[in-house]
Image (cartoon, rainbow, N blue to C red; front, side, top):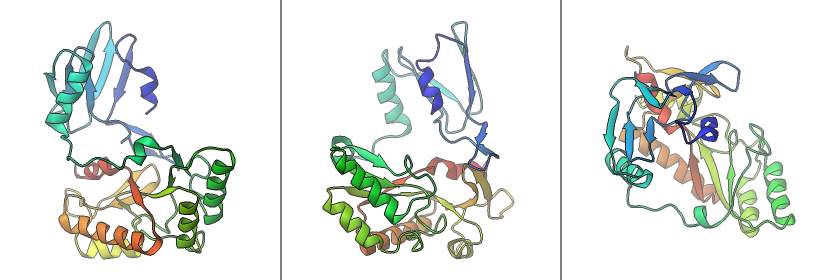
Length: 261
């Protein structure tokens, strides 16, 4: 994400290996999954791979290093390159996101209380927005609202009555979303259930893969398995029905392919 400040690339030396590592929350090196292996140019060119690759710009030349990298012409403009890449590599589903995500402000508790949201802090955050004269919009409750990754229910120690909290947020005019990831905390009840059902990503030896990401070590829900999708959908639907939450912000889904390489 920090590379975006340097765009457009090409007018100065620059290099980035998308297969490299970044510093995680605990200071340890973790695989980088904050960049997509796609480049588009103002001249209509497209560089794409479903695997990370290294790139560098210098002296008017783009150099690419990696496996299964495709370079093609998508037209003569940046817009045509973006449309070509979309059609070929990630075509739209035909379903549009909720209009409010475009028409209203989006607020996120990560700014105020990363890793430490509570029912009280969420309500104080929202009340402060209203009191400051800002319009209500989409409010996302970010990381650590649940007891573990993969245990998708509110941590009742910090959120004693989530349904009441969400009713109050709705009364103030907010739409409420919860942050979820495909990671599963090892040695949690969810981990034991999912491992027993074969719904976690395995490494090349057939063992359950536990990999480091920016929040430590976790297993990964196998999102290529329809039964895993059904498991996640059932839990999120139950949470919606119980609490009245409006939707979910999914993060880090691209990381689910990393352990199989």
